[in-house]
Length: 242
Image 1 (cartoon, rainbow, N blue to C red):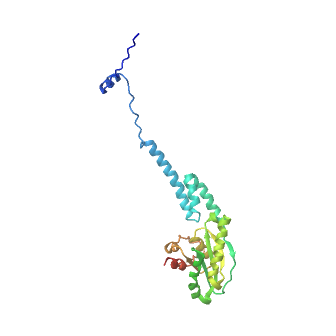
Image 2: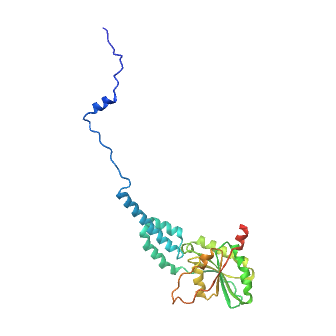
Image 3: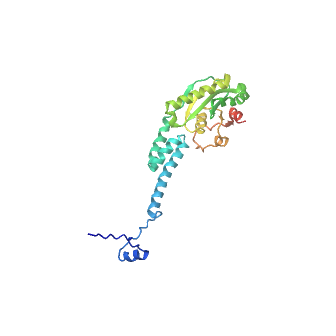
């Protein structure tokens, strides 16, 4: 019995054959998706408004003496829901009180000076020429370091600031300043404390001159006017840069 095997290659199909074979087959058309349609834009706008409301609230709190890093993170996550919590933080500010680290000793003169240290401890030596100019007219000398309201509640942050004040007092020689931690804004808190405690001048060591001289408007019934502010550059920092 003989078996015949067809060894011929299968016929090739041309493009015309495919088209003709498709005939009545319905091919679904591609679905068009508009990535920039109205629905995604509305979602993006709502997300932007959500984040913006929270971050703006955090910025307002930072100008009142709160930590922008922690409040900014909360504002980014909770958005406008952070506003009621911010109001609670503002009410809690009254419970934050200055912390006296060391009492110091007065020189007996009529001019009381508060020194706002906004630089490393060695920068306190930059104030010595000013204190020497006052001579026997010098009275109380108080050296302050300002912490935001959140850091004042942190034992480690407060201990670090107390250590910096103690080191800075060593650069003031025989003046023996009292050492004080203040909660609040790094510029406004010392000025407000100086006005409330009857200081005659505030010396800012380090920081920006323009920022140090910027003052918020005070109401007419705010009590004693804020004392004049003298800005002194951190001499140790300038020497290192030179």
